Length: 134
Length: 134
Image (cartoon, rainbow over the protein chains, first blue to last red):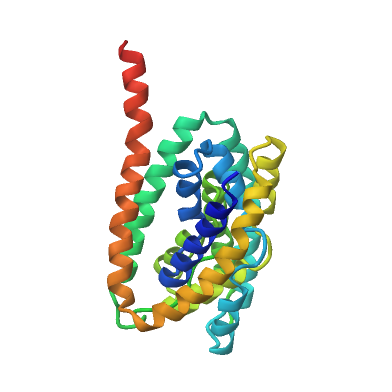
């Protein structure tokens, strides 16, 4: 259908990921719902598919070279997210689409608050830390 | 900096919670992982971002993805078309980010995200209320 539009959407999402250091999924999901008229479940499943390849690999190298990666903690995070994700997926599939969408809205508001707080430049973290979230 | 076992376990538990959000909302989880590493585990901003990024190099959303896939809630073709744009856009975006005041950009985006979240939250509720009214 709108192949060109989809490719452009990917590009715009990528620009925001690089610019703001926030997750691609958090933008891709509402974009898929509003621009392509996908159902909330389909948009979320498609977003998870997009996030399967290591799109943050380039950014990791930058942090790794500066010694800002804690590998054992990273492994623990990966395992936790893998396991938790399974249960989150199971819960989401059984929820009605409109309830899921309302919950997603709450989650976006929470993320906005966290992002706002992160933008306050504290002494230990200079502003413009780059892409922090995959 | 070596991590004690107790602390690693704490990080694992935090990541499990992030994972549930990841599966529930079809996102990567970095948007939660980074602030939680900073707030709960006292990581510096850069270390939190680097650790969160390396945790997302393996396909941590795989189990959540499979839950959606089994429920036929994945549009693989659209997903494949979005990926190249994200990679190219992400590269260009991070190049631009270096030149711009990141803190202000994050704030502008946080406001947009909050408004979007509020609309995602209230639209289904309003529809539902309108339905049950008639």
